[in-house]
Length: 561
Figure 1 (cartoon, rainbow, N blue to C red):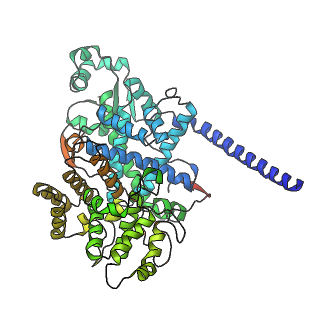
Figure 2 (cartoon, rainbow, N blue to C red):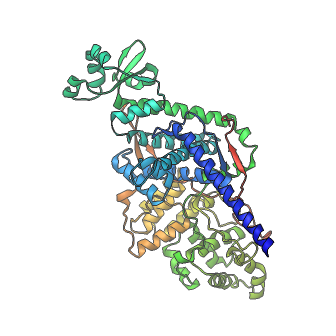
Figure 3 (cartoon, rainbow, N blue to C red):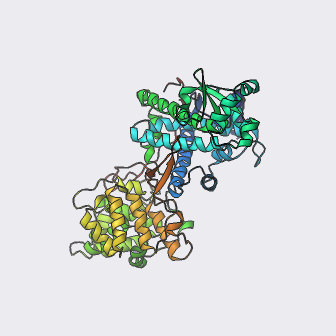
């Protein structure tokens, strides 16, 4: 007894010592990084050199992916990008999702909201590392690189525009070693006329500001300011452009875009090095399809019980078209193939259908076929239903399919699963829309979106046409989200009208001040990795999460991937 007690005590003391060593090492690392994170904004000029567990690797990357998708969604809802309202809505959503590090690094300063200097350094380090992790995830294809660059540019520009006053901008340029110099007072006086005529009046400043010449002027190599040169907003001398500090945002963003594009090309070129580490590839593979929203697992406190007798009414009023179609097939044909049963069964589980009611539903319809009696049903289908509910096999809590997983399904002849907007031919899709009482103008709008492969926007429009112009704010990303939004609308909890929030186009302001209209998609990238596992045949999970790995990843040790 005594020996056992001493052993446990020694083991406990060792754990305390190890924890103390880890905390001490972390504090030392933060102290060493203090000088690296003096600037509120990073241009990510150098790769980080840090040790991360696989768990933290995934956590960092997912947090940034959430932020980029929030920005993407707000771009859809608001054409006035970078406005105060646009920024405030992004901040509100990041706070709502409680993405702690980005709340600090984007919207706080030391001393506000109880943020300490150490917390700020840690948040800036989180920002730095997470950016490079997503470079790994989005460097693979041209489409992914464009998406990543576009959203990172929006994030960077938002932060840059958030710098208050010339002094903050001056400190940022100094910290990031920007290749430009602040023009001294004597030099400004020497070229007063040229600067005033080209830089100040050309930049739209008033006569009073023109006469005082009390604003910061920078000079940069002219190739950084070609857009401003073309618009005659700079004074050129000896290959240098004299630029008003307000115009530096355009120049800095242009340089950042070029740097980011080159960085992604380098990652793409050296990706074979990263691919040698299976732990990293487990995280970054198909990361663009990762579903970052609610996975609608079996959280009993969030759903009320739904009986099999309620399903006929619910299917007509609140099921998304993919689930309504599957339900109708079961009712009409009294049969559904394996992947259709998975897609519908997990959806029903997540809306609150308990296992006994699920068995009642499936048995009630399948046994209407003459060749299927109760005994054969139990033998052929009961195990699969119990497996979906985590009562057989590994007893895991399987989650329902997200929109992108449904869209990316492989659908063969005779199959009914998948997304009707993608997998149904035009004639069958039109018939489904007519059955759902979508009017002709709504059908035209939906079919036009389907032709452009905007399947999730088509689903959102289907929601609007079947719910009295009410909409899903932020777009439809999950069938169970659709169901919950529908129940909220029909119960009067939500009253968001289409005209209040839905914009499918945005105006992009170009560096030269011109505008172009760009069609935007809702966040169609959100998904969870596809699974080919078949629980009917091998009893494995439908979606196996990445195993925890306590090994330390020497992240970008070579800093060249």
